[in-house]
Length: 493
Ligand code: PLP
Image (cartoon, rainbow, N blue to C red; front, side):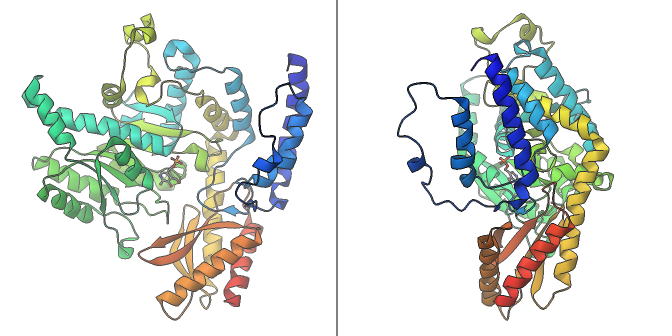
């Protein structure tokens, strides 16, 4: 494809993409193809000779589209959204044009410098404590990863090395320290609440450390409390184990519960004052973190000045095309100490001068995408006020659905109230078994109809339907639509 052909093909593709967005709400939301649908539609091997671009593009409609689940449809109320926007899409085109691996500052100085600036803007807009900004008193700052799972794994590596360094510092640098390091490694435990996302357990699995959960209760809104954490830490210590890392959550995946950050910070502060080794505390706000753009939510971040890292995904609820996960640390030295490698082929005068940030030391892969460009385009195209309006829409839609469900107490029980545009519900019944069975039947019937896509969860043996209204195009008519679909199916069971 030469430049002239690129101009024609790319313009046609953009028209097709714009049409797709305009009409996405008329499509069935979740794909209904059967497993293996694509293989018979494609040749058994790649073409030996070039094919015209028109033929390739035609296959998007005929062969790919049937296997697409439409995450940008207003009927997509499953999982959490993966919202996109035109400014982010255009930024991705530039980012692709400047294709590169961008691991060191000199690989493209603008890539590094824009990332630092945009993450400082974001920290300010979210009301994060100053320790998470690049000019903050603790020399912290932000970095863009591809996913919250990657962020959690990355900070857990830093937490492990920080913990072991602190616990063995008194032993000098000899064999004794080496032995103690390996003994401690076999005792390490990463901790998260029973409501924490599975990525914490997975990170522990990758690192080869134990994982323990803090129990949560319905009467605490399924949030982790300081008392429950203290009990778990005591139990672990009694078994001779070494809790070194904790995931706290703002907006759990099931029900958007928010852990008791001040209570947790107090418990950990008291334990540290009594001589316990310091835990590294991460805040996972993968979805709900975007809600910190609203001043009324920013009080939640106050206690985080006593924690070590925070992460949220602008690619979930902040109109920034997947992938874009923003991680903030209070001390960049924790990451660099654990992740820096300096083979001769990566060295250069700028890195050696220590005057620049090399983001390769803040992440697990070496190469990295120019992700900050889309965040910059989004922040400038919408402005903080535009983004606030988008978040408020999701919050309001959740409240509207809650109001409608509350008007049919004969049919529905709210399992958890609307929070950050997410609620969970169950279908009324005479006992737990009947409620579970009816809820599952209604859930499957609504999804099978294809107009809405919902997901479910099971908490303490209770099956609940989750409805998340964070997709930007969701309006009152879609809330009414999903309510009617739920009523129709609930009346049927
Ligand atoms: N943390 C929470 C609270 C989540 O809800 C999710 C995914 O929905 C994740 C982490 C993992 O996100 P990612 O897909 O970016 O790894």
